[in-house]
Amino acid sequence: DLHPEFLALWLDAVTFLFSARMIWGLDLKQEPSTRGGSRTMPKFSFNLLIGDIRDGYRFLREQPVVRAMTVGIVMAFAGVGAVISLGPIFARYSLHAGSAGFGYLVIAFGLGMGAGMATSNFFVRIVEKDRLFYGAMFGAALSLFLFAAMPAITWAAFFAVPMGIGVGLTWVTGYTMLQENVTDEFRGRTFATLTISARMTLFLALVVFPALAVIIGDHTVTVAGETLDLSGSRLALYVGGLVVILAGMLSKGGLKKSRLTRLRPLALVPKFRKMERSGIFIVFEGVEGAGKGTQIELARQYLASKGRDVVVTREPGGTGFGDRLRDAILDAATGKVDPRAEALVFAASRAHLVSTVIRPALAEGKVVLCDRFVDSSIAYQGVARGLGEQDILTLNAWATQGLFPDLVILLQVDPEESLAREPGRSDRFESEDLTFHNKVSEAYLKIAEEHPERFQVIDASGTRDEVQVRVREALDRIFEPSEP
Ligand code: TYD
Image 1: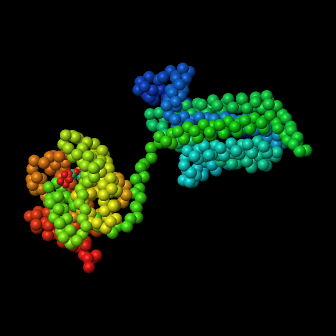
Image 2: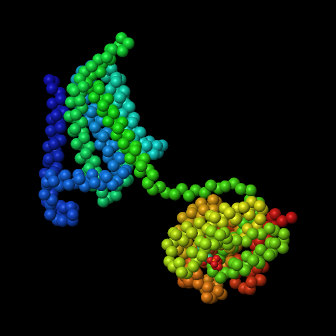
Image 3: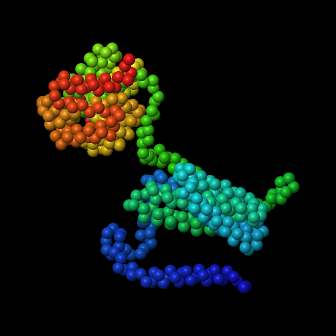
């Protein structure tokens, strides 16, 4: 009854005993050392510890995000240290709350901290993590200022709650961001540096802030007849708040710098531009030697004879810039090209062609006949080169800003047969082996099957005129509804 706090201290002693008993049971010598791959146990030495810390700091210097987070968390610990060390005196003498006063403050703070940690998942969904990190720090500092200004324990306890929420959020977001930004190789060192620095700062704060309170001393000021209590502990708490603000500002600055270099997935979301599209966009696709060139010319004559205003273009190329890209990407002298580079070149040529030739022609109500388009890229780069259909589609939907043909005429021939039709031509694609061309051919058929609304598969074996009859049928079908 005389000293109820003894119970708590005894319980504390029991936890030490428990830990000692647990560790006693472990056979630590059996564990191979992980340091440097050597199997001998490292000698415990202070130098080793210092070396680790030095490694940790060197790493921090090179990693802006990690540095910003570590500095923030460590300085926030100084703020916590200020509250822990000054709290009892503050509660007793400035808030006149007796010896139990600090207990209330701790409970309020603890509840807030728990709530902050528990709700962090919710907050990261509405605020970006780095903003949440320093925002929570500023919130905690603001609460600390209010806390330190209060005249009575109830009000101080009230503001201890948001202070706890801020600290809890800072801790969880800081810790998560560190985890996300550190590779496995550096994880150990980063967290060791963080833990050691945070503890050292905490201990330092436990000494410095009470000393500061003594040095500042107790003051009272009278403003308009009211006496304000400006005790040393109150003023030292304000200093603690300033330290946390400084921490928030440093983190904010550091994170802002790194924001610019952080990788994010490309959005590549096309802006589906609304356009008056009175024209009709027809694309011819097929493997090499399927006879697209010839059939397009015949189709042009046919449509022109029906009074249509026809524009013929081709890919890659069709523009000055596009033709330069075409030369570079098709020339066998170019040699092997990284598939991604290849896909980007076709997309680049296409983007320029769409915006400078195809869209304007469609806007004027013309019929655009194009030799190859997005489906070439899907078949060649997406499937045959193995980049994936979805990525190529996404890239090209962005490049064309969502322009897709009204009709794709797929001239279907067996690659073995069609390659034999044009011997002697050997650009970078024609010199690919038969397996490659078979892949392209199968990819075309698959895409056509998946998009019956825009594809017409036409048997391209037979004479030029036989195939033209089939092409005309397909053309008639698309023009018929609007034909008088
Ligand atoms: P081209 O001479 O037009 O071939 P073809 O005479 O067979 O139509 O050359 C275009 C080549 O570029 C062709 O082999 C296919 C390839 N290509 C792609 O790989 N991806 C694309 O997006 C485009 C438009 C073409």
